[in-house]
Image (cartoon, rainbow, N blue to C red; front, top):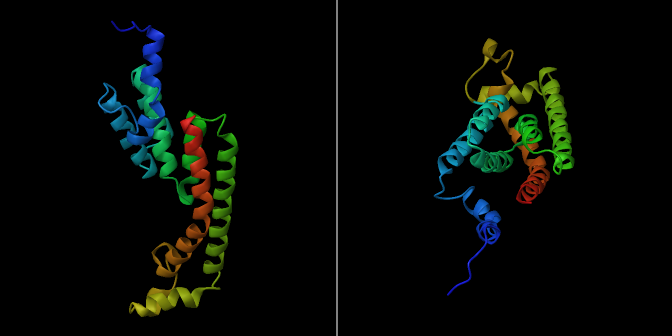
Length: 191
């Protein structure tokens, strides 16, 4: 006859591979909390698309059963960290601060410094473009598309292929550093 296991032994067995389950599926597959975890993934996606705010997500989490809340926060933090870009650093680090500061504070501060550097460089690019230093380059793209005359005056930077190319280059130059920092956040989340 087999040994009768204590409640502690059973709990230890059930949680022994929790990190593996989390990394493989983002939660407990098939558990009673799976609908909440799926909703957390959708909330993370809507947050990254700027369709939802930290406050609204926190209100939603407050309505989750206690057992599902911790795993849902884990799923949210994981998905938000994975979806972080230099453009959404202020929002994503704000979310992390609210739901998981402490051990990640140094990483969050480093990510915020990277975000400020990105914003400063975008500001410098915008200033140069708006002051006319890059006017010919901006307008040449429009001229290639057959747009000329008074329609060229006051170029909308956000729609300019030249501007988008510059932003993409800037983002690509900062991506390796951001990826390293995101890996640090994800590692801290596993602990």
